[in-house]
Picture 1 (cartoon, helix red, strand yellow):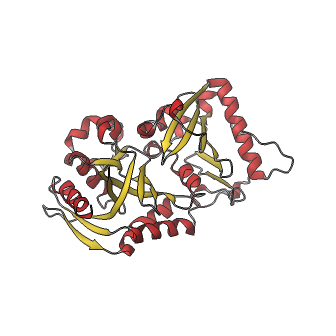
Picture 2 (cartoon, rainbow, N blue to C red):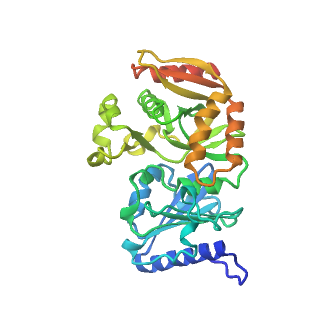
Picture 3 (tube, rainbow, N blue to C red):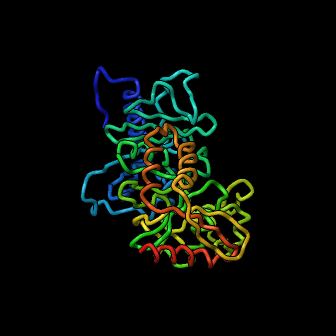
Length: 355
């Protein structure tokens, strides 16, 4: 994977050196590979040892495929390791202390081809070569990986990977529906995305995510990235049957409750479906759930700001992708009622009308 050249740029040398550091970790701890099918593409995850894989893979296990079933070479390869469990060090950072920018972006190591982020205090490095579609994910210790990273692992790397495509984009949204079409659920934190997604799951609809999904904006479709549901602990009382399925039950004073939906309802976790509409939840406090027409600008306001804020290096291209999506499908307010059964009825009714 390492390309030798005397004229390599500093970012290319760093990616190559980081890949060499991963190879040394593999010599120490062995290589564990997982293969994913995402949006019809083949993704290879290479872990040095299985310690970090145990943290990052549960959210991705629903899109795992057998290597023998892959029809093409990997469209993306990510090499993942930590130093504590493997005994292998990462190459020293070649940038000065004042190079750290917003969201951990490293000045001089982010350009049209290369991407690099490292946030002191979180201590997870991600670096990526868009030309070769190879990335490295490293942390000094698996213990430093923040709890939320296990709910949407490699979100930043998936964003960089799809930045080279015209129409694919990870978006801060959920998605539920049927095999022949569903809805994208968008809104800021607390708007009711998770409540809507989980109520629809319990109501028999397919589930593709409740926080981040991959969207094709030109042939509107959603592809699942993570089968993770996240709930504010107080909201668990609305879904008491999930209490025993929370993976981090001993840490709810500081963390959201995490449920790996694929382990709970594997038959209802979908890898993707066409997008028929965008729904924007609003918590009303009234019993029933009703729909009302929304404008494309309402959906744009619900999706674009949080997506742009959360993804490093999010460019005007991201805003343009979201803009194309909200103009391509109808948008609705979903006034979410306290009767959870009314939520999937409203969504299923909408899908029936659109069909």
